[in-house]
Image (cartoon, rainbow, N blue to C red):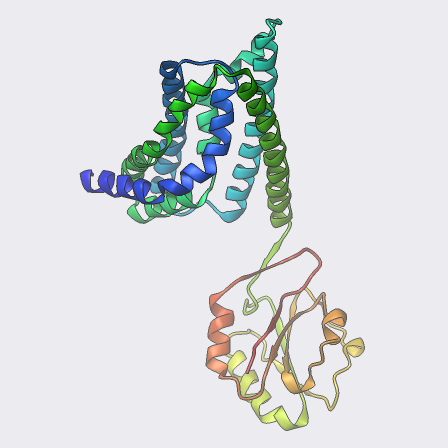
Length: 325
């Protein structure tokens, strides 16, 4: 376990500059938005780090225990929600510090933003490049304890880059600096609201996507070919017959006419030799699953590719793939 801890620490040291670039624009305006002594600023940095620590340990343990990466769709959604919560936190904090400086009454619930610990949690649940590297490594290790130890070392390594932010307390005695910090906080919050909305929208779009495996047994295959490529097309059909429950039918055309194709697009995959294919057919066959393949393309290579990968398509759209010579 000591080795895992050291690996996490070295990973944090090596990627800490990325963390610094990502988090400093958030932490610095927060730290100088109200008057603090150097000692108090140091405590705030420690509080932020404690929040990051809890978030890191939770994800490290989960990644190690599950033994697989958090799916891309979930990462996008988590990051989007985190950005929105972070933005709300920053906006409320800017309002709270402004009211407090004017010695106005501040609602009790707004005092939550005085907790740098929450800020640390919100920024900890952020799938930045450094975090993703550590997350992937936790998955490779396997086991909740291994993932926890790696993220513990990662936290220590990255925190070394954030400690100098405590020196920001020296600037908080200048009123103009605090006002600039609040404006910067609001601008950063607007940016993160936008990024959060983009991530949530993308996650919602991905949730509606359909995963297609073109060689699934539920499909019926048809091979469309020109007369000059008919020999290749029959060889392709023979190979596909070993996969599909129903032997693919080879149809020879001198010219393809998509308007005469009456197939159920949800249960049919069309294999079209490149000599028949024209770019304008793409719109006519948009709802169909089709593969365009040049005559002479290695059939085992094509089948292995289609059998290895699944493809994401939008709702109401078909799977489209074109092999190149």
